[in-house]
Amino acid sequence: MRDRPDADPISGAPRLSQFVQSVRNFGDEERHDLAHLRIIGETTADGVGGHRGAIVHDDSMIARRVVVDQCTLLHSTPESPIRRGALQGTLWQKARPKVGLDRERVRVGPCKRFDGDRRRAPIAGLHATPYTRIVLLRPAARKCCVRSFPVIPKPPPREGQLGFIYSPPYRIQGISIAGEQTAIHCPELDLAFDVGLCPRPVLTASIVALSHAHMDHSAGIPYYFSQRTFQKLGTGHVVCHPELEAPLRQMMAGWIDLERQRTPHEITALAPDASMRIRPNLLLRAIEVSHTGPSLGFCAVETRSKLRPEFRDLPQERLRELRLGGTAITHAVEIPLVAYTGDTEIGPCLFRDEFAQAGIVVTECTFFEAEHRDRAKVGKHLHVEDLKTLLKAWSARDVVVVHVSRRTNLAFARERLREVCGDDAERVHLLMDHRANRARFERQQAESESSVAVKGESDASSSSEPRDEDRALNSG
Image 1 (cartoon, rainbow, N blue to C red):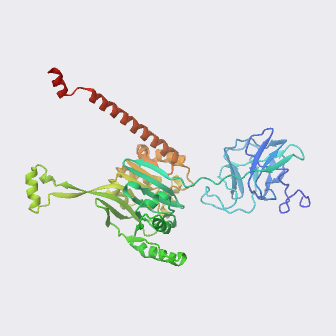
Image 2: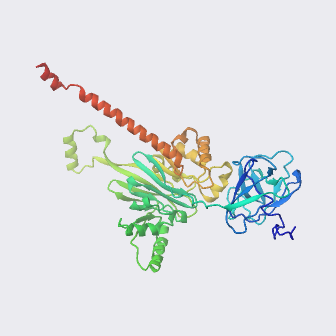
Image 3: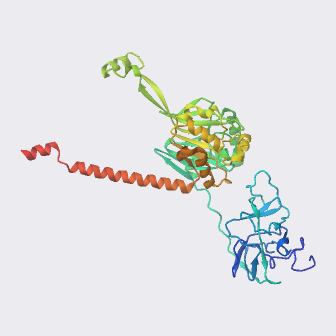
């Protein structure tokens, strides 16, 4: 077979003109998008005639749409269950094959093994999920008719859409994908948490509270500082763990030689349990959390002055006398507004009042599958089972989940939240679940509009009633 001109020079297998992979039920004409596929090995189907073949790419390395005529399926299956790829040398599909096809398999050539996480796609062009074996098309005749023509390439995927959740009166917006980037922004507080990359809205935050220095949380810091100056927004300010202050300053010093200029910036170390005033009535408090390096959680805390209980029944004149006499008649009250866990494992730090009493908690939850508890412990991340425990202690009206892996299907994550957390799942929102969050916001808009309409009708009806003065004049 190696001497044949239409055979692959490496494997000796017939070329695409004889064997083509299919993901559709058999029809008169089938189309297949083959994007840069190399020869990945030989195929066998001993239970269905023992033919052999190969899946190849076009020699020009151009993606082509191939129209195959006169073909029959070894096994019919709908398109949606197919997952093409290589996992320990086997291609797979979800649906179980019919009896007699169990021996059918595809031996894949050089491919990277990735045991332990079957969902992780290899660098190669194909990947798989571990179900049952895939099937191939077989030509009905010795020679099948193959016509190919170039296909316009697909545009790049749309990425970078910010997640958005409105929890009156605060907006929680940003991007958070585990291992890639996390940047959370609360415009009403003029505060951001982390800046893995720097989406444009985050530039408006005067202060960035940095939880830890992993690159997916800190890589956007130089850009944040630079763009704040470039767009004349004022000097950017990053608050960090004391152990990170010197390395961050060294990083910014390294940009001086690269850019031939100094970028204005401000870096403040905030020790665990310490607070800094970011507004006259607003504190930013650092809370040490447990991750793989120096890490902080944060809480924006509002401070209010309230009359001491022992003075509540006194008249204003007496209170004025006491105050002028130097007596402290008020005491400070702290109200946690928005808390951010950063990357952390579960521990006593997450049961503090700053988290338990906050109106909004932004929390990481990286792992959702039941068998990934050990992985969460190794990486010092939260698992959905941990979230179940924390929700019992947190009174927040809204809990925003961030740092979900791109490998985690959001529908699966929602299902696991409902399954594990029960009724508490109703106040949990996935920041990057754009569809669910958009529907929630539209409901909020509709409720707001209806309440305004009802209020308008009430005001109109009350204004139409004659006042007492008018009744008196009319009676006169």
